[in-house]
Image (cartoon, rainbow, N blue to C red; front, side):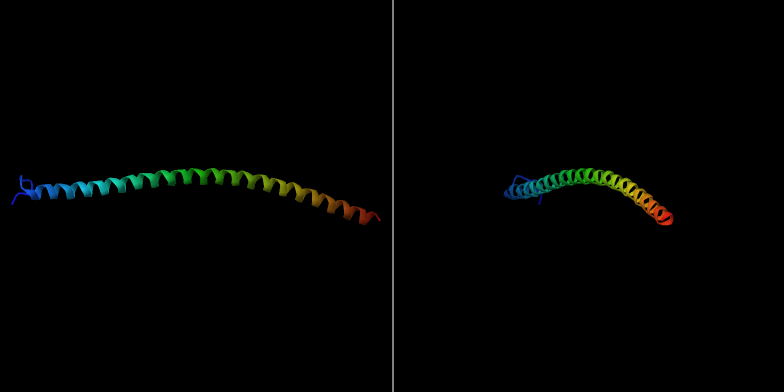
Length: 84
């Protein structure tokens, strides 16, 4: 029996194929939306990472400045102690 003949079973086979295609189309739409969401999240995470790297560099620089100032103070205190 030919599934594409003009009998009544052709209509149900076509309806089944149409339903499967609609399900596939919905799934593809869901995947496209998910990819879009993941791209946006990825962009936001990269931006946050860049911001945190900049903040880290600033904090390291400040830490080095504080260390130098503390070492200078310790040196002055030792010099004052030695002179006293």
